[in-house]
Length: 471
Image (cartoon, rainbow, N blue to C red; front, side, top):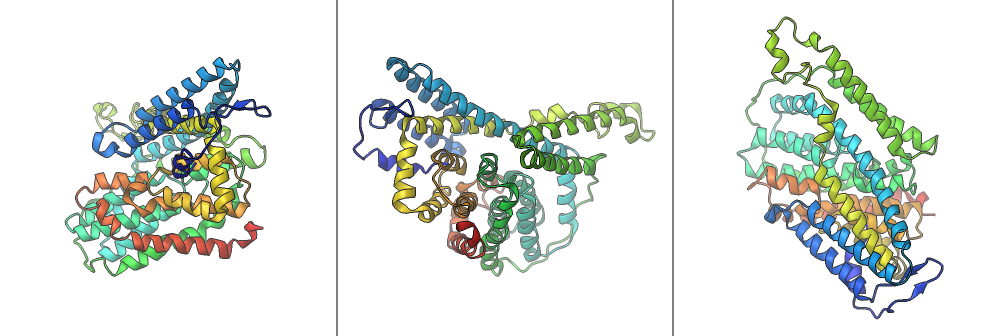
């Protein structure tokens, strides 16, 4: 996504008024009131997004309105200049990009919700709580699990699951909770950086066809370094205490393991459609949603297997196996619609700024003026303040001429840069709410130098071990 700081700086540069770019049939509106108004709309909308925790205004609302307003003034000025279809074609292109990503994420979220409904995550959490591990062991176990679960599940779900374990075991020990939450956020963000499914940013790069599926795993070692360096520095600050064992085992509901297997099959289907049939991965994901639908039908038809002679009212108590207990569409409905609609607003806002001409200017400033490596490192630092979705989408829209190694670098930095601050990723923001009073912005900020050391080390390791991709 695009770097916003250069966009603001570019407003100070002398730019032409309205000049037709004949080969692109576009107007240069960067110095026109339309361009300046669009920048103001986006900045105001994003300021409201960043204050969501205090205003309780869902982040999707301001960006959706800003997107509509930006394209409305773009459309109006193009109509005035006798080019009524140029803006239409551009916005349709942005909508297609959004639709592919939205449907892909919708299927993934539906599977995660189905596994949650089958109590897969509850069973894992209960096992960890009953395990009897000490605080230092749990610090490493929860962080490592976050690192390895987030490449398949999203980093938000992963972080919330691990934080629930931390709170259940050491909720009274604020120091342990703070350090464990920081470790979980870093681990979840790092784990999502080396998998096409681990983060929206990696997904966007993969779906664009810039980096193929298996090449992303070249980031495994740099991502692991990004997690391990701050974890090692925090280790000795974790209290060396063994809490009392508590909690009861939680059994997974019928079909849980098969849903996990279907999710893996769905991922394999998406990869196969893309690699072998050259079809968009979203077609494979939607096919995988069909797998889940058919299995849900099977669970309903075989619901009697779960009652084992229990009273008839068990069929109506919401327990697993009842005719209404598993409904694939309820899992679809429980998707993070605010996030999906926020993504719509971001795609159209950034797409509008790109159509106006700002992203070309930013690309020239950053990737030609600064150089690809410096620009990509700056993108990661910026993602600690601004959500990495608009940042990466802006980079993809700029589409600078870079080697595969540089595209992997920006994928890494955009994914892990959000760990530098607690507000830099959805995982950090969510955990501040879940562990309110124990995991805080300033508690995380205290360990930012350690996280920054991991950030720098991961970049160096990437350049050393993946040098073949920079040719």
